[in-house]
Length: 135
Image (cartoon, rainbow, N blue to C red; front, side, top):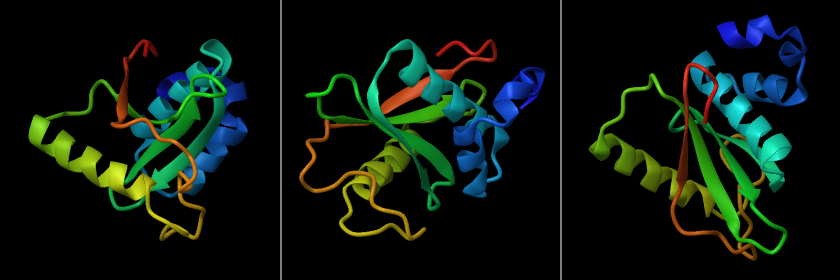
C-alpha cells in the first residue's frame, strides 16, 4: 500500500479499516478496493456503495447503484498487476455472482450482499486499478 502510505489521512479512512478487518491479507487488492470505493462515492456519486468480502475467493467487492432507481451493480476491484486468465476470471466471477444472491447470512456472519427483493444487474463489473490509481 505504498501509495496509500503517502496519504496518511487514508490510513485512518473508515472503509480502509473495514477492508483490513476482513483479514484477506492482499494489500494490493485492498488498495484497489479503497480507490474504487472512493471513485464511486466521491467522483461518480453512486449511491448505496457497500463493501463486502468473499472469503472463498479472498477478495473484496462492492455493491452500488449508479442512480437511485438503478439496479444494484456488483463491482470487483482488481489491481492491474494481478494476473488474469479468461478461465480463472470466468470461474471466479461466476462463483462471486452466485455468492451475491445467496439468501440469509454469509459465512462471515454478515448480511448477504443483495437481498432477494433488490434488482441486480446481470454480470459483474471489473474495476482495474492502475499503478497510477487510474480506474
